[in-house]
Length: 133
Figure 1 (cartoon, rainbow, N blue to C red):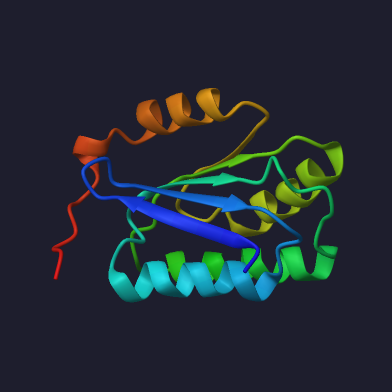
Figure 2 (figure 1 turned 180 degrees about the vertical axis):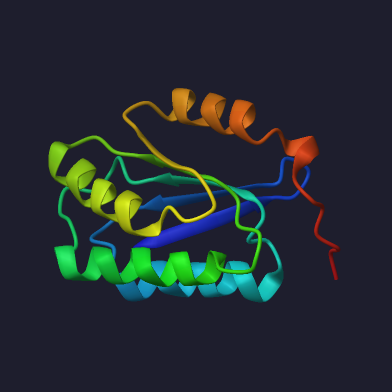
């Protein structure tokens, strides 16, 4: 799988790292899992800085539309996307434009700056806790 993610419940933070070409199906699987497990409200840090290739514009729009649909009527935490190339940044901008419904999506070149933005935009203590099974 091209994307691996971990959850830090005390920080209410999901960190997802893209390692090889990431497909729309893989990202949609992640978001479906976020919804299924009740962690959609958590802050999300998508680190795509290791990617060299991008998805097609159509796939990026599909992901954005689908994530915007997840937001409709539900809380969904902000997303910080870290990129290292202009090509990946361009894809991230397509996602940003299509998916930003009632939540914030920002693109960064530096993971530290992305994390600071998440901490300022949505402090962990203001994100609802998820009951762990």
